[in-house]
Length: 343
Image (cartoon, rainbow, N blue to C red; front, side, top):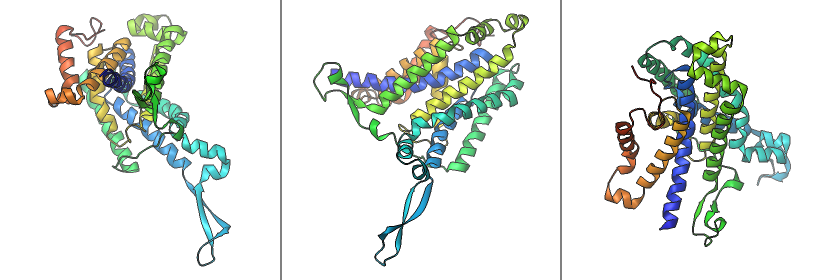
């Protein structure tokens, strides 16, 4: 029984990592700019399709004639191979194999530019507007992005293979000194959790230990005073919007081997991530991360066969039930601050 519980706990960490990453970006935007960004799920989707596009570019084929191989009619055969492999040999083959993690190379600058362009082009005009208007305009942007992806890549999911070396399962039980092959877990899911941990830790370290981050935290607490000190806080907040887009995009990239991306993958995660943000407390970065992992673990345990047999459908509603209970007891969420989203 311990092995089943431990595996469900690991599944919860895996789900929680995705929720926490998306909610972290949402909270960065709300905490700095005060904008309720319903387009954030679309940024997760765009990151996933950066991985798709990168692999499509890598696997573009070149056709050569091999005179040493003949057809039954004696004609030389055509040999098809990825163009990058024809150019770079073994390194090209490795690049194709590791296309998902390698796509981070293009994802970071693309998502940074998308985030900054979105903030400068549209979002900045809604800073002082009611939250209802912010939700409407950002939700509209999400639908536009979704339809653009659908028109370019089609409506069907596009599977992204994980690197061959990272397929299969790791024997966690043996690593913990238990009997071999009792507790095994997919390697890529462990990679995703560790990747999420690094990104979350990096964001917190950036905000806590860098001068830029300290100024941003000061601006989140008292924007007007920081501006009076001669600091261009608007420029720094724009960069933070770009950083939030990068976080969402990287979360999407690394999730593609677990869930083949399609045009509505962002919407699937958006609602859950907003529940996570509200439960953690609007504007609270630690709250977003804590709530993401908490709700991911609870959803994982609720999906156990024994639990679903006892309460059918509980795995579909457990997150919302927990959110209702927490908000009844703590109206501001787990780590919410006084005055945030309050009249």
